[in-house]
Length: 374
Ligand SMILES: NC(=O)c1ccc[n+]([C@@H]2O[C@H](COP(=O)([O-])OP(=O)(O)OC[C@H]3O[C@@H](n4cnc5c(N)ncnc54)[C@H](OP(=O)(O)O)[C@@H]3O)[C@@H](O)[C@H]2O)c1
Image 1 (spheres, rainbow, N blue to C red):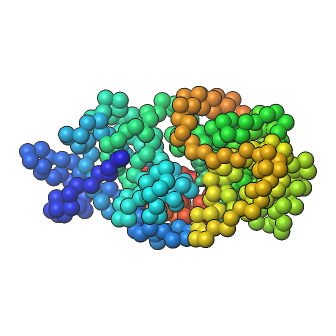
Image 2 (cartoon, helix red, strand yellow):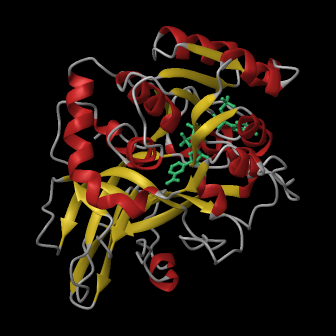
Image 3 (cartoon, helix red, strand yellow):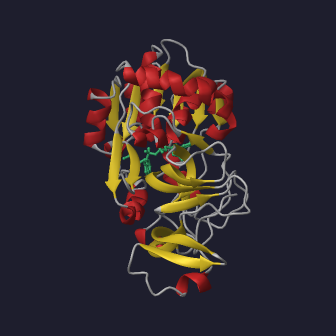
């Protein structure tokens, strides 16, 4: 795993100069440059829907030198941080997941774009831009760099590397092509369709010659889906009195592919509307994060009756496809064949609000936090 930069408390508190942004600590013979380091810390494990008060902003300190004696570390200045629903899963005391929980009192970890300020790693030089797992803080020391990638494409905005060209774009790509087994003419339904993953799934499905309907939680998002993202139809699920009827009206012949981002009642209802040999890609269950006692899915028998394949997946199992994904999506974007909607919050201190907003539908497109532009 990684570690984040924080000097020993005894050393840090010995300075009386913390009003300045840069201070020097004597460590043995060498003076080590320390800077103030704003951080977002998880206070306690979260119950129910995450709240801003589950996190706090802390003023820490960071060394701008890669630690000696640790091979292959980098120190980075964080520029853009990704807000992702899966991070809610790390805010509970549950270790049986594909990724370990956060530790209360520690800096939150997530995907980001950052600039290297020091390195003992031969693969990364000072001045390189990288993307990968980093800390929700101004400066991070990354000791384990397996999940860090050097950015080599600069003719798109840097922040796109945590969205369209990063984990969420890749999720849409592998989820659609590897799990959904799409065919031209398929009827495709996408939930949370205007979000980071959903917006690309819908556009890839259109490019594949499918008929695509998306659901989203506001009239503005529905408008975006139909008029900017090219979905054939879209509806506001919050205003539908009967979801089963709604899906029947949008898919009179049934659904071939359901790309499920939300779980819960929408999944149950979609199952009732599937066609024979339909595919359900279970990407995420954002509707279930705040539910302490989730209700079961009652329409599973349709899997047998309609010979449906329903499959959960995690994008990181498909990383061997990343080298194919990146140029494909860059080309589609540059040719204007796909568009990308990003929702940027300014300032690390606004990170908790941006993250919490994912669970109330506050984000319009991929939610990113800008820590610094350079
Ligand atoms: N399997 C993987 O490898 C993988 C990787 C990345 C993401 N995911 C999953 O993919 C899904 C989408 O992630 P994303 O990053 O693209 O997030 P996102 O869609 O950009 O943001 C979350 C959206 O979820 C919707 N939402 C929130 N609470 C909801 C509820 N109770 N019922 C229905 N919809 C709700 C909101 O949109 P509305 O306003 O439309 O309700 C909100 O904007 C999540 O479930 C996530 O966990 C999976």
